[in-house]
Image 1 (cartoon, rainbow, N blue to C red):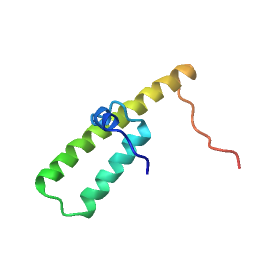
Image 2: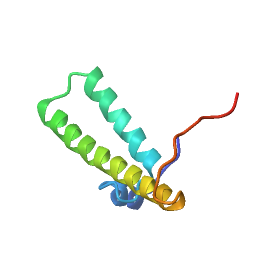
Image 3: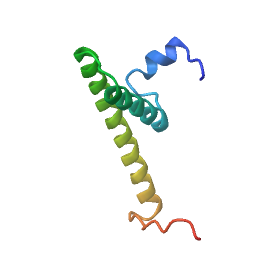
Image 4: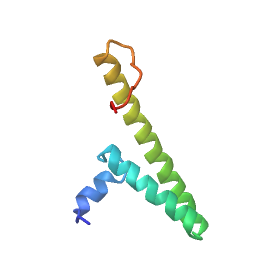
Length: 85
């Protein structure tokens, strides 16, 4: 596990400095904690709010990438054929 500075933790608290992968990882950890433990109501609500923020961040980043791909592919997404076997 890497050690992050307190500045990084504060900057990433709202999710703006998180990568898609970091946000998704945090979201998965929150969901696992919410499903696997008996959390106090306040902590459960806090986790739910953070999860909603992270979900919105991930969706926004995915939509931005989709728009970039559309531009690169001439405004039309092409069907994914997968790797050749």
